Amino acid sequence: MSASLTAILRRDLALAYRQRSELMQPMMFFILVISLFPLGIGPNPEILQKVGPGVIWVAAILSSLLGMERLFKDDYNDGSLEQVMLSSTPLPMVVLVKVFAHWLTSIVPLLLLSPLLALFLNLTQEMYWALLLTLLLGTPLLSLVGAIAVGLTLSLNRGGVLLALLLLPVFIPLLIFATAAVEAASLQLPYNAQLAIIGAMLLISLAMAPFAIAYALRVSQN
Amino acid sequence: MQFDNLSAFFDMGGYAFYVWLSFGVSLLALALLAVDAVQQKRVLFEAVKKEQARKVRIKAAQASAKSNTRNDPQKEEVSSES
Amino acid sequence: MWKWLHPYAKTQNAYQLCERLLPWFVTSALISFVIGIVWGLAFAPADYQQGDSFRIIYIHVPSAILSMGAYSAMAIAAFVGLVWQVRTAFMAMVALAPIGAVVTFIALFTGAAWGKPMWGTWWVWDARLTSELILLFLYLGVISLYASFEDKHQAGKAAGVMAIVGVVNLPIIHFSVEWWNTLHQGASITKFDKPSVAPDMLWPLLISILGLALVMAAIFIRRLQNEIVRRELNRPWVQELVSAAKEK
Image 1 (tube, helix red, strand yellow):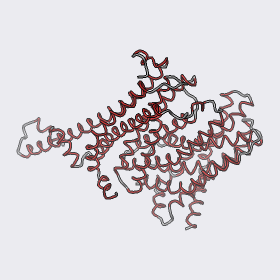
Image 2 (cartoon, helix red, strand yellow; image 1 turned 120 degrees about the vertical axis):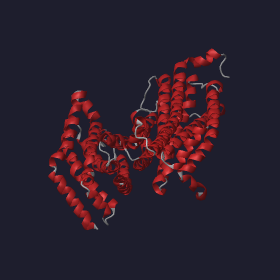
Image 3 (tube, one colour; image 1 turned 180 degrees about the vertical axis):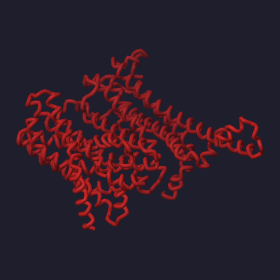
Image 4 (tube, helix red, strand yellow; image 1 turned 90 degrees about the horizontal axis):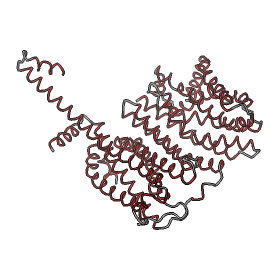
């Protein structure tokens, strides 16, 4: 069983590597959105520092939504998803591996870009560490919960906007706790509590989301 | 009654605009919802009736087509609909 | 209880049950809603702090409570539908969603109209207003997901999954927003946080909650009937139903 799972992981990573330019697009979107904010708000470093965490998180959520749709789309279109469903490997496990591969290939690059953006928005070093930690804990949560909605909208032709409509309200708690952690860090306060809550949400979604995603895929495959 | 007279009631202690706006919009929204529910039923039944009538027409047309009505153009049209 | 409930999973029986219940619900809804509203507007005492603007409570609180109640009911229907494969449950969910959205809108609107004289602005990012706004988004998400599918059977399942995701999230959203709110703006708004309500204010409030619940139930019953007919347009029993209605 684990052999087939590693095979799926390797296949997804290889596919992602061959579509590098497509993976670049959400990243460029991320940078562009964030560089729009200083232009819109004004270059005052203090204001930028104040809105920075929120801006980075909102931009991260939006750009992860952009890349989310390709999570199952190609597999659905070429029929390989159906083959996987028919195989003896449990679908929730397969789904978990696929979400992990997607997170590695399209979210981790965003994390790697985050130091640059912290510089853009004049974040202090404490704030940056808090931001990185919240992103590390929070973005897998984005991918897991997002994959449920991706599964549901899979058979629709124009699911893109609908996906955002479905997911943005669901992501609000994450946004609140993550930005609060960074804000606490900017005041030199401990932010373990916020991280713990995000971690708890991640664990809950890790336990439940794979089954919901698997069910959603079955609904879409009909 | 908490109010001395009717105009005091409508004035709502100076908050007339907000109170009546809230209640007005709320009742309007609920009324629209109720009207829509009733309307939908009528529309659906209307559609079913139309479909039934169409089936009856088709059957009649087929029956009359069998019993040799070639030179009646009007019936020809109806049967071609099916 | 299952033996008693099970026949109503069949759409025809559910439709007939609705038909029998509807007049009772409509009359009791009208009576209790009118009593609650008139009592609240004209006979309940005014609040010593807020005067008569406080009377908005008789529509605001019922709609706020029932907007959440309707969402839970929707999620329970979705759960029943997904677990026991009951088609009627999906129809109930679909029939409930727009009602819930409208009631959420009412809660938001009356909240804003109450906030204007009390807080001086139409909108503050008060915890309860904010979570109500998010609740509205969740409703709209379920409705638009359902509307996007051609195949309504599939649509029901998909919207059901989304409704359950929403209901798992709802408490998290509520507490996170409450916590966020206390973090960002002091306790300036909490000054009328539930002073123990006097009984002559509480009774009309309870009756208007009951009244709104019954109004929603009555609309729900009719919408459920519509949904059943819409899905089963060509079934013989619907055909007979319509012909019977024609003869009347």
